[in-house]
Image (cartoon, rainbow, N blue to C red; front, side, top):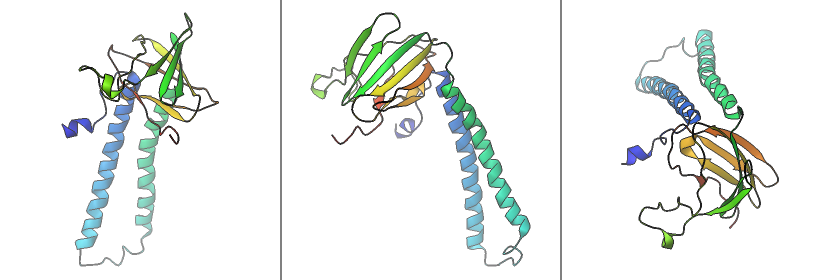
Length: 202
């Protein structure tokens, strides 16, 4: 259904669970702000009378300065906590190097054996009945679950962005720069990701 597709994907990592909690927390605050501002605007719009003390009141100015500051603090503190969790790298079991190209990804497992391969999206004319259009690839990466995984990301040509939404990971691949992130998969499954960047002029 339409409403089902508007939500976030089901979480498959502790990090994504935290991101979902933060999303719900922020949305609750934003909805409360919207209701309060909407109520005040509609009451002022439909009210025929004017309060002359409302035009210049130091108390009201203090309230509408302090109240938004408190609301921003309630949004900023969980956000900062999440920001530190995103960068927290704790003894990774495996390292995966990812290199973005137009229009495919290259992967390298260099911890145990030097395994390198390219992963191309399956064209529409080669799709089978159980494949997903614009998502399935010819070579999938296989990663362990319940293990800390480090990913090193770069690009050879233009900007790319390696993303798997259900794992809560999105890292930019920039030519000449090596970015790093980490994640933990807490359940086995098949997870799809895409390049979430407009890859150059072509």
